[in-house]
Length: 533
Image (cartoon, rainbow, N blue to C red; front, side, top):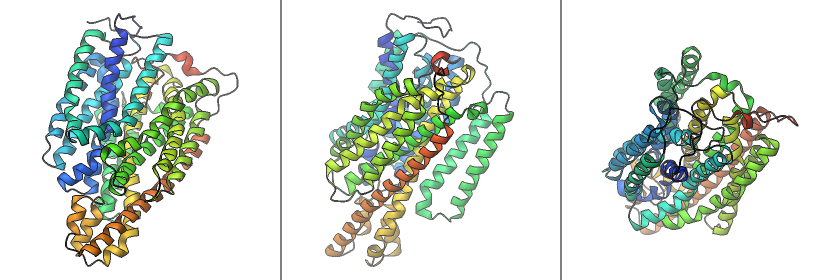
């Protein structure tokens, strides 16, 4: 059913059913972002591939989604948000098929990347469809539900993925999208009114989009492949240089474009920059530690995919405990205080993980993850509300787009950077035993590229006598455990450094000053001041 192209809230008769379908679509995106980690060891065994390729399996989805979300969000303004949501759901399901049928890791990466196109259509449309149906307290509740679904998909994803992977196989992580997409498509069609922005121009800054996509790809490629080929490799150096050149080029393109992809006035708002930095740090930390800890639990500690997923759930508990508190502190004191405190608390949890070892108890891991979750829960709502609410009305849509882009790219960077650091520490720790084992140089290179205890790793050391093979395996496990722990400690320092930046960048709300976001309402694209993840 079509409604007038207006952003004024309409009390649709089935709006809560509509919200359920909208949030299911968004949940499919966040579940896809968070569910693959526990399946990585099984994928490594089946395809006998390197750790850098496995990172691309994980990162291809978030990279494409983050790079396209702003431009495809504008498609919703132009052609209808419900239509773009439904198209995104169809594409996510359609491209899940080649991923599910992938004969090798290359096809899996391609399938995941194409799924990102659907995700980039879903995220902005799912947010922008809420204000036309809800207003006042009901709108607050609706966006709270969206936010809970976002964190739920990220946090519960590993546990759900573990159950599916062990029970049905990792390929069912993609097949499951087909019935979910079909049901969501039908319910959205029946219950959700169409909306669009009649004042939106049809100009899209393709040059700016190309520059930012290429810059992000060059950076992630360099960070992913650098540990394997060496940081001094000419290609890696060239990619880092290209990242700088493309980023600077993008800045100049946006300054001169008549209809820029991102209005650079956004970055003159200190509160927005502070919220963006905190959000990037939050997603960088959570995605990176989740990826590494799941690999460590399965490969160094020997837990099954289900057990590894369940052992990651304490972080979810912490997040949901503190999301309401973060919102209350934001309402009273502004977003700066809970964001800074939250990042400090999360850093404390990361410091606890810095002492992780092969004999650490699951209770020790749970305490660290709960502390990290408490910190991230404090940050979540304030950064979302500030990033969209404390900007001028005419910039609210772009602000929400950049905010969501920072979430996805922050997660991809977290996986790439933290894995690169862990690999460097692991290689250094195990170098003595591996180099003295009698393996050929080709076998040593294979061991260093492979995931500990994967089929590729076992194949590389198969020629060694039983006793020596056991020694090499134990040395690799100890080195991997030490590398993960050291990486967590470094991540804690990085998070604290980012906290200092947020503290000085984000201005304190003056006593008695009104929160501009609370009075601003929705942006011109229908995106509310409340966003999520």
